[in-house]
Amino acid sequence: MHSCRPARLNNSGERIKVLVNNAKRLVCNDSSIGKTSKGDGIPAGSTQIRQSSCTTQSRGFFTNQPSRDLKRFLEEVGTDPKEARFWLRHFQELEMTPDEPFAVVEVAPAVFDDQNMLERLVSCLAFLHRNGMDSVLVHGIAQSAGETKVGILDKQKQQKLIDDNIKLVDMLESNGVKARPFLCSSHMISAKLSSNVNEVGIIEDVDTKHLRWCLSSGHIPVLTAVGETQEGQVVYTDPTHTTIKIASILKPTKVIFLNTSGGLVNENGEVIDCINVPGGLNPVLQQPWMDKSSSNLIMEISQLLLKMPRATSAVITSADSLIKELFTHCGSGTLFQTSEPINTYHSLEGVDVDKLTQLLVRSFDKTLNKDYFLTLKERLHTLYVTESYTAAAILTTPPETCGIPYLDKFTISKESQGLGTSDNLWKQIKNDCPRLCWRSRATNRINPWYFVRSSGSWQNGEWIIFWYGVSDPHITQQIVQYTSSLPSSFDPIAPHDEIKSKKVFSTSSYHKYL
Image 1 (tube, rainbow, N blue to C red):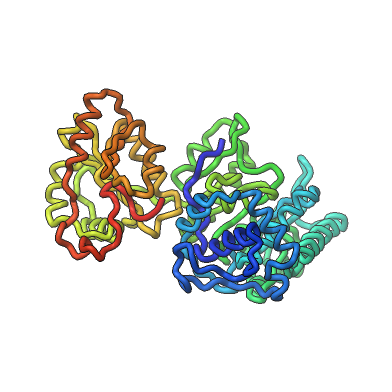
Image 2 (cartoon, rainbow, N blue to C red):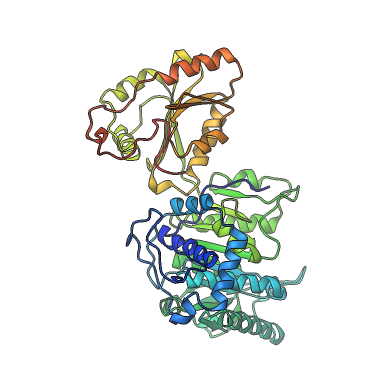
């Protein structure tokens, strides 16, 4: 069953603003449609958006097809302004050159047999393309149940591969998108025959210059999973392996595996919402319902992500719900994302205090009291910090809270926002601490996130006191009295505290957004 995920699509906030503003214009029938807004709190010129090479008419929003694209976007994502603002805040800036794809996508053979699903997929791809988010598409042929994977295709399967390629290209072109067919991708994919002649070809290398040319010229490349040996033998390659190999070279933001059924499911038929790599692999792989095919795919995806930038994620989802997967909180398939290891300390020994100080000062935009870490030594319960010092949580043990740990600091730097770090950090705290209390300023914009994770709260207009795992009224009263009267741990005369400074957030919140 799906639960709300952290923001996942690490793409330019300016680019996503274009999507939402265009959608708003469609709803309002604004005569200024097609121009990029500079509002909504996004600095003008902060990111260079790659423009597609479509003509003014095809890129504009006067034609029927772009209007249908935007209508579908609204239908699948919804028009809730809160959710739109959420994505605007959380999407990371990602500078992309014209020859870099937003996604490398594998389209399963079964998708080509479902015309309605294929039409929805093409509409989504066209929508992304018109908004500067191009994809490289890879497809192969279906293997019958129990059939041995054959490296050398017969005429019938060769023709099926060509027909599917032409069909996809033709549909993209009909949707106003320039696409280029690679009916035989063997001039790009170097492969060798397996020692078992009945197996698919093994990919050795991919020459991506033709793919980069297509992207830079505003075309979507559509590849068949076909390679060529040194002897000139054309061989069929596994489309998943081909997708992974191309992604490892082009390093897109997203690696997407599209099918007709959706994400991975457990024994109850519920979609596995998210798998963290590498920490979350074993709990999933060790499940009794895990089959060999799914296990192999999970391992291949995880091995790819460990070699990719941390901003890259992968997803397995249905071809007709790609928009929902990319642009909603809960998604529609199984997300794979790299999780940074979190180290745990019960003293400051081994902690890089300088790096931790820089993280706190940068996150809260305030200078710590000079004696903060000196006093922390005496009251530290647990310190959680990622290896790169981009996220941290500091728990103390004040005697006034009846032995219940107090969350003194919880911070996620901009570099780790949108990567699931906040949820991973909170899960580790929850596993280690069955009871916890903390406070947040009443004006803190992330208080809804805290309310979901608490079992009780109290507020006085200035502070909101949260706790979980506590039901005794006497203890909650002690918690409220202690936390509401705590002095600030930041320097009251630091330059950051002057009237001209930025808005101050709670000492138990983390920087800006989750």
